[in-house]
Image 1: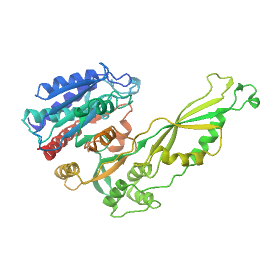
Image 2 (image 1 turned 30 degrees about the vertical axis):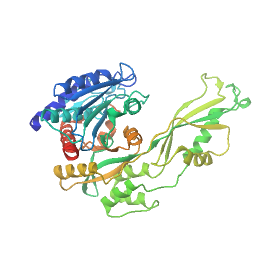
Image 3 (image 1 turned 135 degrees about the horizontal axis):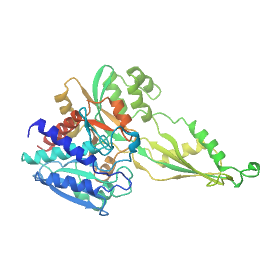
Image 4 (image 1 turned 90 degrees about the vertical axis):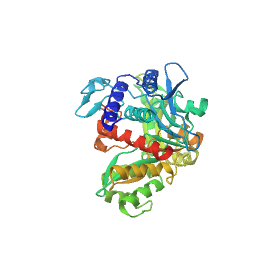
Length: 432
């Protein structure tokens, strides 16, 4: 099938997917899984639906391999965050095609990559592609909330369905101009999401006589002020060192690395700064349920992100030292992520060779994701080499970052087509 036809095909598949409301919660991803199954089976791709509950199905499709090569997985998720239609210029579920861009919730995160993965494997099947190892496409549920209906459940309940040597997921792929030269980011690691609950105790009383009470909310505010003054020791991750060496030709120690990034420009700073240490950000608070009652208990949820390799046990003494003495408990909620994959692999070679093909002057550089993706489930379960890479060069990367989880989310058709080309390239490079 000609490239222009793949362009039209991926546009149509994405528009159809956006028109299926899979906002999580509640998810209802089965409608997307069934749509993808019907689309792929028309091209001869073997499909299976796996669902912990009927309305939250995961699709796993594959082109069986000969058995003498690695298994490659195209990983994606079909659920999206919510959308307030009053904030949008178009209906968030319209899938409108305007000026070469597909608009709608999930266009960037991440139904665009879902559509590209589906079209890549469908087109390869139509061409009679026979991979050395299985080529697998998984469109999973529940990535945005993570209540164990998606990939973690698949890894535990149906490991053979998603076991892979290599995986391509979301997380990076944007083209950046750094120091006057083009670079494409490939995410090879991610920080750990390790939120904790700060439970602060006081004594209740009538709000008209605050002096006879012990306001837990005020005590929490003082503790959060101390937390805001936390300055953890900086660390230069290997991914950041590799990025800056590629861009500047130099390495830098923990105290100089931010200055080196500033010399490159504000984009480099935005990439490097959140990756130099753990971060803490109070995001939710709950105290009294009545205006006239001084709270005896105040609970603050703190979003905490740890560097790859760090654990909550490693950093809790640091947090308690910053908070100091007080009437509080610190309780870790759930820690996920914090994994990395090596760079010197056939999958890295595939990414590099693709970039060399489409833009010979550009280079690929690794990056650690400040948040986290589903890649860590594969790394932990199977030792999978998992990268986040979906090439994007038609939209300004800063604009794309602002649109994710926001109003007027959209993706250029040029980038959808580029993504299909990359995924097909990777399949041939690793399994052809």
